[in-house]
Image (cartoon, rainbow, N blue to C red; front, side, top):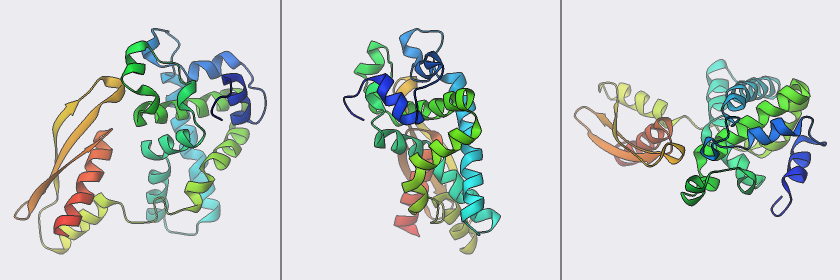
Amino acid sequence: MLGKDTHTFLTELAGRAPIDEALWLEALTHGSTGNPRDYQRLEFLGDRVLGLAIAQWLFGIDGADEGSLSQRLNALVSRTSCAAVARSIELGPHIRLGKQARDDGGHNSDNILGDVMEALIGASFVTQGFDATAEMIRRLWSDLVAGKAGKAKHPKSALQEWAAGNRRKVPEYRLVERSGPDHAARFKVAVSVHGVGEIEADGNSMRDAETAAAEAFMKRFG
């Protein structure tokens, strides 16, 4: 969708000319613009709609147990997955950012891309209802659902099971450093297992940093 005007972008995203285009534009608006109508409320709603739509989808196509379904759901609705979908539709150029956020690379920030993707889902739900929004989500998430997202054991779960299996204490996570502006924050987290060692890793959120640290720990010590 690169190079297309925002109206065309939204029309292709929604599958038809957007109802209440002002609301869809609100979903594209970051707080750094100073506009009081930014995407945060729609993001809050879209996050819940996305979770329900993906859960319903997985329930219908995957006969796995509750634990496996939850693992896949968490992976598919994660910030990383939302940002990946946002990049696949070339959402970045359509996000409305203030000058500082633009200069800081906000158009390519996982945090902002993921948030705006959820806000657009919220706008779709408000203007088109759940069925149309679930259809949009299935179209956008089809490659991720068809792939391996969430099928492998989550690194934090794998580390916890490894520690228990080796008669070690539960892994401990701690925040080492938080850096960068709020809209593009970076987190450094350390994970340690008593008597084994400690590993640090970075991420765009505490959750992502903890996951990266657990994965790095398993690669070194597992």
